[in-house]
Length: 83
Length: 401
Image (cartoon, rainbow over all chains, first blue to last red; front, side, top):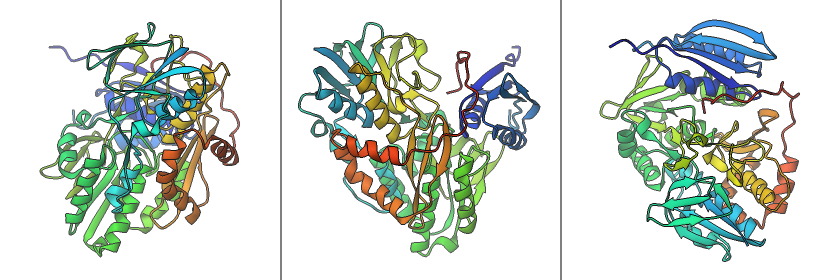
């Protein structure tokens, strides 16, 4: 049976104050599979340091963090240590 | 008379029914239970030996003009405003308000239901709180792990309150030296909101509590006390005190897309109208809103819907005002709104005293008679709005919660 395709999921946390964006990201992470890409859109500036710390601790790859259309867009690839 | 059917007899549903009862509405509350629980009491029942009256009969909390039906909604046609119940009855109305709350959903995590059955918790019901109290009474030393299993949690201060109160209990019993106390959280810091964490993290350090951040519970083995995280970490303890994940009621809706993945309802964050249907609202923990799930939200949202139904446009501003027991005889209120991020007030004995008073005030507050006092109090304690963040103009894609 072929492995399930990796998905790319966009999470919109714009307008939410801390801890809204990291809550949304953690929820999406619970539902993600190894290799899935999560794209988090947020406007709270605290998201930059949160996403970095969170990616490091979960072992996920932080592919990019950039400003786009007035939002901070973080793209992460989920890595499960235990498949 | 316009018929309003309220699903759920909790904080939001009961207050809304009583506010509408003073007006020309035909109000029915459909509630699965006649025992109305003041949920924050579970914390003190489990961790501080308190034995207040935790529940009151819902009938006595409702105006005599409100019809109370003890039954469980199983299927709701939001467009037709038709509700089918477990007993097979059908109720129709002109306006529908979903106030069915959030319930502990331990089954989402392997082993958590068995863990709750054995050790209890302070988030499900009175029986679970008393099981946790018994487990703490039997504890003579070892490792206690306290934390929240999932980012969806009612009452955001409650996981940290749990560890503070357990630390205090252990010190009083002379067991703190014999106990390794561990606090775990799926967030990158002990308290989710950074400004509040500035109060919480130093206190945990001073108390010698070991903290594990970014620890998302994957499974629990109650036999060995092993908690495993999605991040690949493991924590072994003698007494797991785990805040379970939460989910909305098991009700089937038409249209079905009003529900998110955790069975919470997509409502407009200001008007609380359900997306895509007329004359239907969601309030309290049942609604998927970008604010904390807490009693104060249910209270203020009930007022907004009462105003909306009486033809006065109103808007919920995302206000929270959560009392937080810091375990050292002081407390803070965590306040926030859609436009103001969470900030604490100064830790004071008075704040804790107000939190302890709430179980008494709560029952009367449901009558709606205290609204002038609440209005003044909330205005006085309103958080200062931060500079408005860039507003999200385009419609949201299905969000993660």
